[in-house]
Image (cartoon, rainbow, N blue to C red; front, side, top):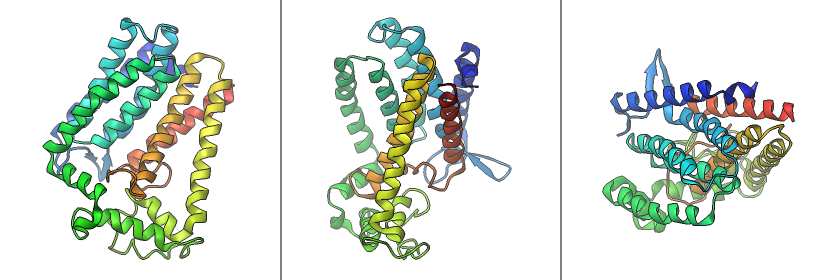
Length: 296
């Protein structure tokens, strides 16, 4: 019952547990120049994936408890502190993509609750120099940005992933090469099972399959919005809309990276990409969404 997530004790225990995990993971072994995973009994656990979902009950509870006061300091300051602290810990891993995804989802939910445009614009303007600093301070991020702007300038280096992803999408044509017929996943396109799985979908199933998958996400968004509209209380509404915004935004980021519309970033495609923590958090979110819909 999603109402169990409405209890302050449950909300703050969940948040506290996630914050503990986000701090502890900073002391875990380094993998691919980042500390994002715990390894327990052969399984890897990524706390940042769980953090995205854990934040939503807190935001929905805050919105319901202080309805009509979203633009007041006594709402904005504690909410911004929790969201900012969580995003900051994720940045330390470092994981800029997940931090931006978390902040974007929170901004969408607060905007739906009536957050004034001036605050949204203020956060965006304040965030631009921060993002610029984060990019220029990390050489690998700077290379990703230059590869996004001109991938052919370093086709065998920083632009390799971008170009191979576009080759995969273009190779599929209208109907694709057939399920399992991808050539790009055979050591050409890095991370074809996770970060660039949409490009492989387009290669194997063509434009028809790629657009069909986008249509499926469109149906998911429609059903999520409808569940929120029909929820019996504001907590259920904003919880449903938060889950919908999270999954839709994550899918949008992944597809945009695969189509070279955004700089390369390792963001999994919900329901499709390989990854235990991502899949578990996504399915848990869908279970909560279905429960909200059931009560509507």
